Image (cartoon, rainbow, N blue to C red):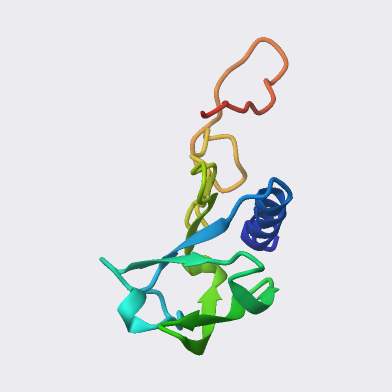
Length: 135
């Protein structure tokens, strides 16, 4: 199955914009393929404003995010591979999402086809997934 990261990023970008807020990306600048001005990198990370008013030619593809932005008055091309994106959030409120590492998996319950240990014993039907609200 393909990664859900690009879909989550596009959805949150749209949600942040629909609420008249400014979408920011937190990027791991040390990952291969990240193309940002060196002067913007602090502690191996960079925060990028990707609001429509701040960038041109924004393309949020399935492999990377590309756009043109001005840094110190000079227009530059920015490329951020999807796996390098650590978070997307609204600058005004901090609401958004930290993204798990690409390929990160949920802990196994021992009931999968690749597990050597037997699954938990249960008398009733198996409980479905659950969500937790984080504020």
